[in-house]
Figure 1 (cartoon, rainbow, N blue to C red):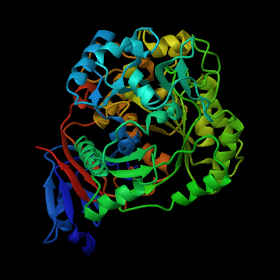
Figure 2: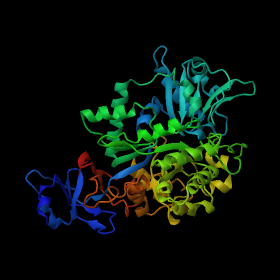
Figure 3: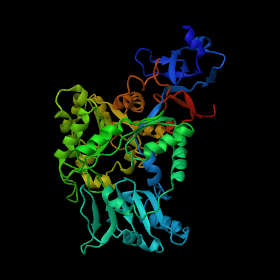
Figure 4: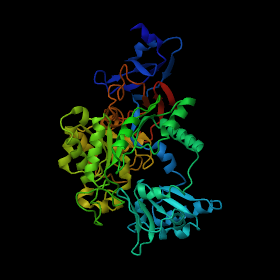
Length: 543
């Protein structure tokens, strides 16, 4: 053993180590120094890695893996979006009205009712309309975010406060939904429409926002997360917020942010997004740009090759799709990675066409990814690997659908497209890089649930729920790779992350069960023995 290894800061022993390193797939102990993996070996090697100040942590038979990464999350924006009453447990209109009435009774004079996480299935085929809830609010101004993050329901008083009296025209696909008389129903579809409420809806203070973010990141670390690909930078004070946190301590989770690029952007705006890529801290950095090629199926804004059951879904989020292609090419040639929200089959096809038009320059082509991919035809599957485009998917989103296709999503897209929903396994089998995430707060951030649902195609711990397109289930190893090695590939970090190997970042997760072989239902609730980010223990569980 080289003498330098005797100065390890931390030695992790007593583990079943799944390194995901082809050169050494398994091990029994790991040494960490200066935030990096110093050595990987067996129990007999531990004594050679110890120094006077080395901390030795016995993992008591836990399985140690590369640090789990959420491949699609919104922790900074989400702490503001997920404000007020959590409606995710509401299953019907009666339950929704009851929850809103209880929240309204708890309000003080003049206070707003805010809520989030509302499932479209609650409306059971009814149009999303404020008339369904107004009398439960007792006159309070209210804004309710639906679970998809792309739509909201506002009460009459909220609409009046924001001066929303009729339809509006936007530079992106968004709408203030109105009835036949031009009266707003309260349903606001897509970000530009929801943003009309921003000037009047109460927002958390800077101190509250910071405290809630730190609490959330600590909860993520307790679930085993060491990093997150953050698919937003909702305003440009986020780097200042993160730098302020790091001035006083450390972030519990490593964050990689991708600010949004919206329709109407000009060359100066694109160059500004390029310049933002220089911003970084110890455990955060701006690393990419996020686009939207469409919206959501439930909102009627997914871009589909054939209309949905309401005759909607035939338009791209960018009114001029060629302008999207130009923007992606501008960023790609400046060395910037892009991630594009594309749920519908037409949206996915356009993103792949855009990358293919970059030609054969590998430095411009192999830095792009598609987010969500809820429905995609077979003829597009092989293009991901051929073009070097990563697929980014969220297994827990299947909880909003049903195997019998009676849910709002399935009814909207129709039987044929519902039958090819969330084709995780097909994409992996076609050779694609497949990164997995949660899309928090759209679904819970717990990576154990992501790993388990990827295998079960139903929520962990609910064996009575029929799996959604069960033929798309991943193996245990594929799921683990989706939160580790494939997440690193999708971010261009494969030379320093996603494996347990000397020189790699000491981002590590130890679970009480083996995430590859343990039954999925057991994995979903498995204790987290240890989480380490950059060599720092961010969570230590009970053995």
